[in-house]
Amino acid sequence: MKIQYLSVLMSAIAMVSSARATEVYNKEGNKLDLYGKFNCIRYMSFYANKNGDRSFVRYGFRAETKLSANIISFGTLEQEVGLRHTESIVANNHFSRLGFAGIKFTNVGSIDYGRNYGVLYDVGAWTDIVLVFSGDTTVTDNVITGRANSLLTYRNTNCFGRLDGFNFALQYQGKNDSKVEHKTDLDLQKENGVGYGISVTYDFGKGVSAGAAVTSSNRTMYQRLQKITRNTGKKAQACFFGMKYNADKIYLAALYGKTRNMTSYGKFAGEKYGVAKNAHNIALIAQYKLYFGLRPSLGYLQLRVDSDYSSKRQDIKKHIDVGARYNFSKHMLTFIDYRINLLSNNDFISAAQISTKNIIALGLTYMF
Image (cartoon, rainbow, N blue to C red; front, side):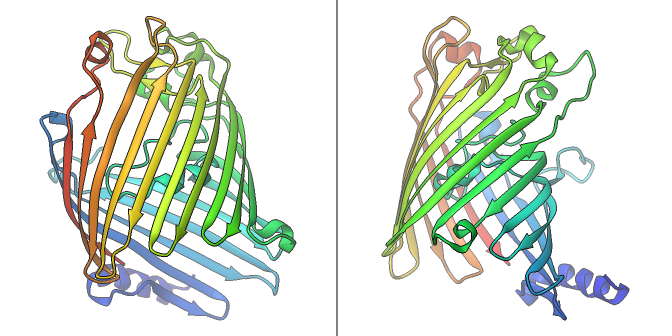
């Protein structure tokens, strides 16, 4: 990109709140869009880790270049900046959510590489629509689930142009480990070996869609051998099945997921966390858009591990989510989200330091 285009880009970033524009540049087959949001959020809870300010700014760039009549190159970069820390705190305050580049071929599909969403999220995204308390069905940097590194992704829309509504994706993840013998629990949780995944979704029409995704990844040597993981399984595997209905101002979605040697739980003293041999996930969400801009929602999520450290079945997440959002315009909205925790306190919940407290979130969002 030429120097003057960079200058235009920097000016757009500085003036985005007043310009309210997403298109930064579009000329001669080259296109650059800016998107993002300012999220002002306040948590209220008796659980100290979920009480207080949670405001952030998220912004991203999408670029496209038309290489020929049937070939387009593209790239995406998305960043987030937390606003609740003081100016002297830098760590974990600014990070990259996404960063990938690729090429798209008409009626053949697209291929890209970088930090992206795992294919499990192709189905998991259907219940991840609540503004605050959602996304618990997938986890960031946990092999091919949520956002992750080193992902090579092939996507095909409408089955090579032969079957409208039938989409699939193939994914490969390269190994990510630090090769350091003494690692923290956080390091081990975010490692991965080589992995593969596939997702298939089909739009039946009239707002009805169904989808499935399957992944399998090698666990690293330290993940299997370290006692703190409580699990020596060689493979981290998952399968998701989902359905959704989105029409006539009504949105309904349901998801069932099962993982093996993938779902982590707890924050134990000494042995920091466990990895469940098997875990089951159920998520339900319903929303209705009223004519004057109000959109109430109701959700339910349950995550159960088949065997905890004492070989018993245990719910580690179980809650009802009641919320509503009101759109002042296409750029500005306000919301309230109330998570009602249904977990009962017991010896395991206490030892694993899992909260049983309710949380209320209030906020205002400006989108551009």
